[in-house]
Amino acid sequence: MKRVPALFALVFLIATGCAFADAGKPGRAAIASAHKLATDAGFEVLAEGGNAFDAAAAVAAALSVLEPQSSGIGGGGLFLLRRASDGKETMVDARETAPNAVDAKDYVDANGEANRDHSTNGPLSAAIPGEAAGIVWIAQKYGKLPLSKSLAPAIRLARDGFKPDSRFLGELAGRKDVIKRFPASTSLYLVDGEAPKEGWVFKTPDLARVLETIAAQGNDGFYKGEVARTLVDGVRAQGGRWTLDDLAGYQVKERVPLTVDYRGWHIVTAPPPSSGGVALAEILNILGGYDLSKYDRVHQIHLTVEAMRRAYRDRAAYLGDPDFVKMPIAELTSPLYAAGLRASIHPDKATPSDLLPGYMDTQQGTHTSHFSIIDKDGNLASGTQTVNLIFGSGFVVPGTGFVLNDEMDDFALVAGKPNAFGLVGNDNNAPGPRRRPLSSMSPSFVVGNDRIGVIGTPGGSRIITMVLEGILAFVGGEQPEKIVANPRYHHQYLPDVISAEKGAFTPDEIAALEAMGHKVSESERRWGFMNAVSWNSKTGEMHAASDPRGVSGSGEVR
Ligand code: DON
Image (cartoon, rainbow, N blue to C red; front, side, top):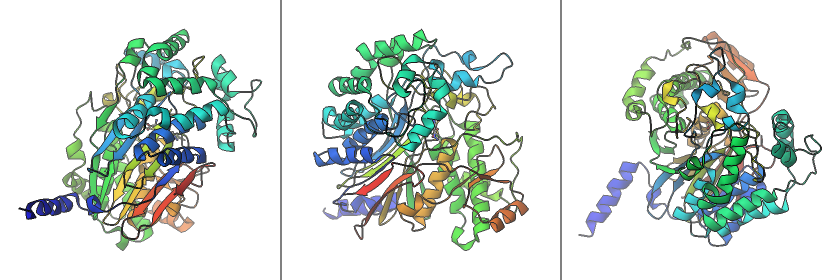
């Protein structure tokens, strides 16, 4: 009799492709986030007896205060969780939704072109926020501590203030003109109408009050009552279409993560409404058919770019909100489909992306925020949260202390026309009541026999390829410290160009890629703000690293 469970466990381990389910416990915790004070907030709640999920709630809430240019309770997020006690894996989808009264015509001008001002600035650009509901859901369903404890560090930071870093101040200066359109945004973020200088102490007592209300009342503290009324009145006063029903009806969704096996590694990642998991699965399935280590670096890049190109084409063609759109996910993520795509890749020649528009200098950057956590028991949390573009819509409702997102721009507002990230789409990603816009956020776990990595980054459409390169580096034996710092390259089907950070390729590699028919564009800017942690269950080694591209990021093991 006793042999049956053992046999079952063995079959389970083989079926899941790894020994992770039986890997013991780390005994320490690792947290990497975009701000040292957010990382500290996570450790603070762990010290109070919380688990990785309480820490995720604390870090997410603290980042909402510390990095309003990147994420916040006026935005949303996707949170991938793994509970060590039973191996449960889930993605908490706290993505924003379009309001019920959304009118696609708001986002199209008289010439049929996308109205980028409406989709990226001010109240019309703001979708119904999901972040607060996500934080509450994670803390209450998976955490051990009351919300009052997990939100305490964020409340303290909002009330007492902190000194924003040069990235915050620089990005604020860049968004000043839109912020100036709205009186509450101006008084919150500007000093005498100008972007503040280093040394400025940023306090948000209004946000502290909203967070306290959430800590006391849970979801109702944001989505019903006083806060909800203030938000709806403020949005409508400036021409937005939100209603109380939109807020009261907002729902977090739990989604089954996408998984893909790549050369003995098990990748757990974000399903729709993220496009990240499907694209990663396609790319990894294509690449899994080659032994990349046997190719020279130019051919490694060529094959990877060709896989990226094909995956981003499918992103544009098929993906949208899973609650509204039927998508061939099983087909797109199957090894058989990847084999067909692989067969279409010429070993030495670029496949031109058809119907090419000219090269667009798409948005890239460090806004949006990713954090990665492993706790002492082996629970994992990988969260990416955003207000979309820098300081979201730039619009703060008076009395709330936080900026609203401009996530409406992530919809395909005009089919085939690129959004701020140069991404195209069709009706599958059209705006509609309560729909979630397609995201690129790709919080992921990389699970091997002995090593587990938790990884993610901001960076708009480049998120997926950055996470891919991070996964490949981890699988190749690199540690988080190197992975977050590696130079990056990217291809997204349209525009048909490999964009690369300086240092990603040597001049000889660029020449060789161009000889194969690729166009290479080196970017003056660097992109991404990756935060990754890892644990080696054999040696006990843990790593936590924050991207050197960020200013205040911190990864620590304690
Ligand atoms: O969900 C998405 O894909 C975008 N809203 C993310 C925006 C982003 O990463 C901006 N950072 N550079």
